[in-house]
Image 1 (cartoon, rainbow, N blue to C red):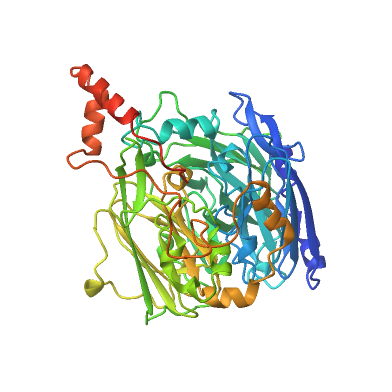
Image 2: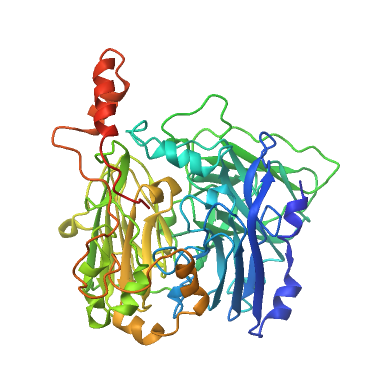
Length: 585
Ligand code: C2O
């Protein structure tokens, strides 16, 4: 099992040699179906690159240009790539989400991502097309830094990807998830956890050396607790932000988060040690029989010695990332120009299925990618109305200090991700704290932790701040892929007039061709209207609200009540005659 790791080992000498150049790093990715069986339980179709899975890491050095030529050979699905955590300053059109900054890449066609990276750190890349990355299209993206403040502290670096794994394809799982048969919105539970797309991984360790472990959670759903037996982690980077080195015995890594930790090896090779990723089962509505929530790997000092089974842990008491301090000591923004309040809830619509909402609106992708609306509507681009009724859009002014207040009115944990920025986390409540009350706010941390993905606790809140200094169209969404599909997405339209100056006339022909191939308009409002920008006739919308008196609980009771089976039948046929008006997510 050490096989898949070898490609992730990067000798330090190579890193230093490449420093000082600004190279162009080019990847030719032919995206297509392969078969894989990473948990040795079930062979299934999986999305690979160039006929292989696991897919290759993208590796570059700060300052480099990255070019990714994508050919879609999936034949049955369109695709896209998002480079998670990269700010894409000046290149929002390379950010990846279909219907937001591009059209999907249709089967048989090609598309080029081309951008520079000025930010070192640990990132990942993944499909941003509906439900697609859990089928395999996700891998690590590492930007090396010849000037890292920690570069003298370690000898070698090792990338560890953590993920969850489903035996079924997303297409079928999604159909069952967003369905009248699942009115409570119970998310499919993964079948296994993986590290580096395998289980029982071995990592060769040399006594006395210090390693930088770059850890990425590329999972669809599960956060993981991570610990290394008898070794202390020293956190030095979260989501691309260098932190003051901070000790931790156990970390909690939500879907999409990254942690770089230093681990100093023991001085002798007397024993080998287990490390564990353990899926947070609080996220799961049901725990299927026989689910093993853990994935184990080993730090191997001596190949001839045992690989001991991990000890059980008494309690999960992970390190609290809120206390981390960025190396650059950026001070908290104390003055806010623009507050974006997002109240999260889950509820049913009149198709009987369960959806996710911000401020009572569930996201539905517009007809025209939001970027193309912003670029084609002149001075009207600052009017939120033109971006449609279901995009949860907010227009941000140039250089405003923006505050996102997120109130989680749901008993679940949610990992929220912002494209285009890392944010300061200025407040995070305990669970059950209710909505944020600005008049009774906790004291601002002086130098708040920054990252691009943050956990908001059950029925709690979080307050995030950033400066709107990056014109672009940036999504803010829950990174649980089920909740992306059920609409837990907002769209930030940052400095649209500045964006026009930056990009008008500069969208590459192959991007426009992607829209032509799939017959999607590239001009006008969210409905594709180029004449009357306030006329949204024909836009894509969510199903309507339930008639008064119907509640999720009522649907559950009706659909599943055996006693009143005839009533259940009546309800099903009542829903069955509702027209399906919407194209979702
Ligand atoms: Cu990891 Cu919207 O992305």
